[in-house]
Image (cartoon, rainbow, N blue to C red; front, side, top):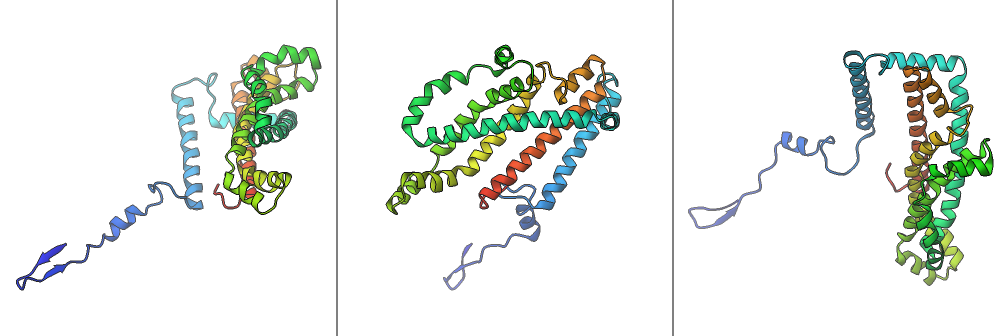
Length: 286
């Protein structure tokens, strides 16, 4: 603020300091735009959000829907306990997890090789572009009869259905990640005398590794979706198979309990891939 005194001297008043309350509101971690959140706040808010979902579920189950349509959280947990006691839950979880692990690992391995090649070499992109554009629009579930004809009714059609349902999207997303490597880094490596394979291994793959893992995280959900379809192929075990069997007997509490298991396994898988992403690039924040 500029003021004029009697002597004609112009004086500049210092800017007013914000009050402590105003500074506190501006620095509140809850309403800060961007940035990071303290671990304690993150855990607390996460627990509060889960509690809110459980309370809403309890209220809906007791006041809106009947137990035959929507079980309470307590009934769902009790059903899970019964499934665990008779060994059904453990057997189904192991069967489904093995199918996902094998099928999605094949999908990711193929996608890393092909996707990085497409995103790095324009000649490879030109060779694969038409095939990928064609194959990605064929619904993987429509291949079910074909896989049954080719592989029989064992584990092979289930695993290859998971591969077919995820590999093309993995390839496209990983190719985009490889394309995003800054040209300046590649040119600098060439200037320093690095060969083509060295640039690919120590520049492209190093820079793209976090993005490749994030692409796998996104498409892992599609793998679990394809598992449901895969376990309709004359399966005798698995989480989706148990849900279908529970539906036949109208065991809604078992169905909801198995859905919770799907969510827990998926969340654990996502957190594992996030940890791996952060290990590959410590400068990234979770």
